[in-house]
Image (cartoon, rainbow, N blue to C red):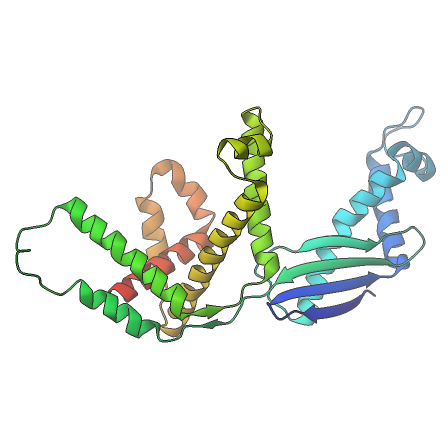
Length: 285
């Protein structure tokens, strides 16, 4: 049975060190080899009838162990999460600390739990912003255009966001920001490769360095996560919910070509609608 050690860090990151007895690794190895044997078609043997030793030699131990890792890691992580009663909000970073044949393996998972949010006196600040928009100024009797109203709404929303970020306290896990930044950098690298450039060449054309763009991405990620968690906390406190009927209505009103995909992501649709309802709640404080 695997031995699990849990280490919760001050920033809500969680490190899980799992020690796997060699017997368990060997058992998974043999199981994987047997599955490969069933499908193997080696010269001189009918499908599935080649000896294990020859199948192992033809495939190579490295490839078999890679399959073992792909089978073991998700299962061990789920067992650790369940037994330690933690609630991760991101997929884990996985590190093989020790993985030698004949010896116990050690696997380290780094993930993050949902941070606590202190909302401060946010209602007072939001009410001040709302009150500004209700003050009548002489000479403003003319009817505003739709574009002017939209601009005012966007400015008001931006002020609300800044007020929420300023008045609330959230300690974000480092692994959370690291994941976001790495994903965005990977996307940027893919984009530059399609242009036939290296990342450094592309950034040089913008007058930026990799370190600078990483800092920009980290700050954007920090703001986005903080705002998302703050709005979720407000929604929890104010008991703001989204019904199945509201989700169905949103999906049916979407373009026909998008409805199937949205139907498969009802959780994301619900989160988006809940966030919008929370913003509407703030606008009416």
